[in-house]
View 1 (cartoon, rainbow, N blue to C red):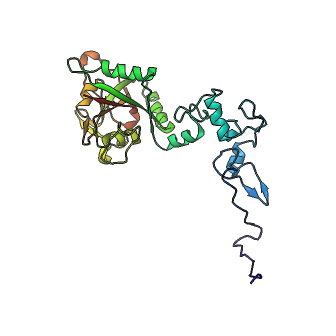
View 2 (view 1 turned 90 degrees about the vertical axis):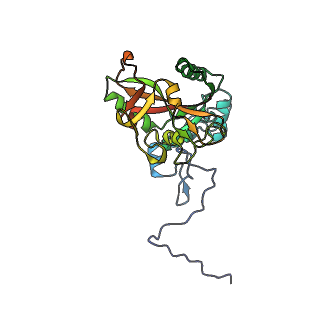
View 3 (view 1 turned 30 degrees about the horizontal axis):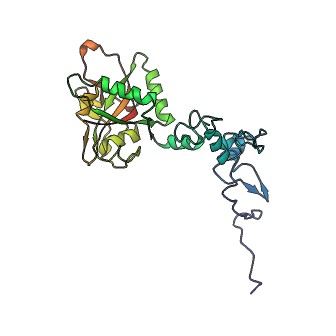
Length: 297
């Protein structure tokens, strides 16, 4: 039985040799995501031709972590490994990613992993209640509340980390309408999930007016609708005064919170004497969801 046939049929190739799958830790030194490519027994520092073209192989510089003499790698922001990259952030040698706070910034203010995740869809990040940003959002929200009405309790704020292509489309829209101005406005709808009670997590319910808008950046509203209807026709409506948006903030859950989306909207300058209640835009590229405000009344 020891002489069982050992030959293997190689379909379409006589030179292709099956090599053992590399261990997960031995990843491409360019992207840091896929195993290194093995060719005729030789292990390359990259995983594919694309990474070979995009990178220059191992960096000649040492790991950026003080005291480490190993070779730094582009996949880990010129640290030698993910562990040392995180340690560099913890020690304050480099700035941490705006989203995860544990990995070094590599693509703008984000690390490679978070940048790829953000490219897919928007993410929420809770704004620290001790920071200037939180106080600025709260101050604007409460100060613009309609006079004569009892101001709500401002509970939480989530920053919306937008994909680059969404911001790019908005920038193109603004550039093509140079007379328009950027205005902070507020939009709300029925929130059917417990957003605010379980952290900055968007639901997948097609009937949730808040999460559908944030996920699609106003491309899709609840139940797949693509526009609101109002006195200016079909389009997207928001309000300068959050108290007016509050009338559309409803919930069918046991959550104690109400939810409003703070937006940046590009519109023609409005004559203050006209006292326009709502701001209308015809397309989603004209309005960006930037913060989710959790409050109670």
